Image (tube, rainbow, N blue to C red; front, top):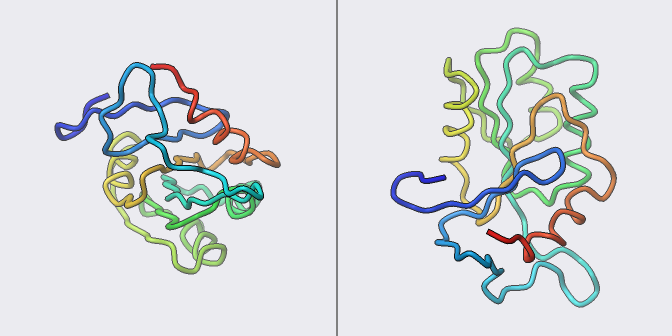
Length: 150
């Protein structure tokens, strides 16, 4: 998938999308020598989370946000909202007080691009507003990142 002249490789892993930014990837796709986990098993890296919403404040929405907070080592939570009127932005602000919030009338694909343009970490995760991440989700998918074949 090409964007602004940079080759990007993305892979759907579990219920979210994780993508490696700004690297030209070879067929074998390696982690370029950096370590995702410390010797004691702790995760060393933070990622940005991109979520696109439009009146998403349903009964399960708070569980979705809580699961992201619990499972993902977040650098920035980036919300692209389509002018919700149901308290969606307020719910995100309660859970992520430092969320980067941008409002746009764009549809999902372009909204996701707007969010990705705000990402400043090497890896990021796109999570849809109706998904609850299972226990251990992020750690399990990161175990596979170094072994993705192109």
